[in-house]
Length: 179
Image (cartoon, rainbow, N blue to C red; front, side, top):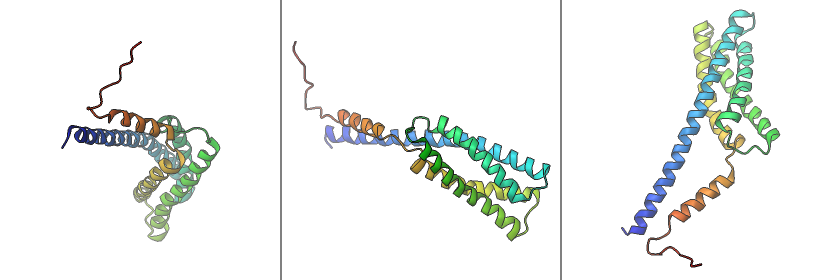
């Protein structure tokens, strides 16, 4: 392997490592907001379930809507604060659309457990709500990062240009200008 080829391989691995690190940070931030959203969701759910006469799924839908509002603020201003902010109306519309799909997934699992199998004790309701939230979270993570909070194309262009500059062969001496 020549010096240039090994440098290009290291540069390629370095770029891959940077992308992996960026994804790991994104997942961690998504997880922090999501964990707080789970606490909000469960808190409101159990408050509605035990403090009102609402049926289980209705209480869960209300809790999910409150958590969606909480999560939007967290995602926009913490997790994805560096992402494109030019089309807020479109962003919010897509966020709500994908959140509603997540709401259906989350509460569909709870609905099936409660009304399909008769599992409606407090412990069972919380378990199946948690299970539904997990499935909905996988969908939401994919859809939010793919469609709602898009990466700025300029950042990728800058990273590509910087990696191009790092790959300059060692055989080409740097140009010195004489004044």
